[in-house]
Length: 227
View 1 (cartoon, rainbow, N blue to C red):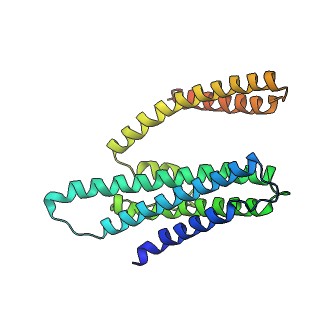
View 2: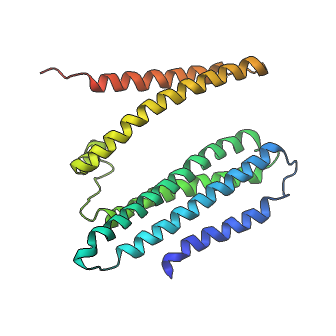
């Protein structure tokens, strides 16, 4: 029962905000309504993540027969990755919502800015706390010391060859998708600037800098080292 307290608490907050945000704005605008929807979606994603974490926790405490261990372990790993996926979605949504609320609604509707800030902090904390699921999905895994100067390398070395191959394949595809998305976003901002008259030059330059960094970093990483 204790394991369900966090999801129930988040659900209660979700229902409370759903009732509070409707019609509470001093000057309801399309921006305000959009931020309200984003907050509710972020909170809903956090709720789903917490439910998956409860599933992994309950499943991980079970004892199964030897012939069922593979299927049992697979279900735990899938649940853990689902929890992390939903938590990451909540964090990304809450991050953009937090910035938008402070930028556009901090003076006219400060309460919505407060909600966005609290959700951002909660989603970040939730994402960090989900690391404990590793003890169920990877019982042999030992998390490196976060203060270690080689933390990233130690964390990468802790995965086996099969997991590294999956990571490499996924990141390789992701690299090209990021490049294509940034280029498409740059063209979109250019046409937006032309048709609306609102210059997005700073954003376009920022995209160019990120694009430059990603490509040069990748190329230098692939460059053979001197013997």
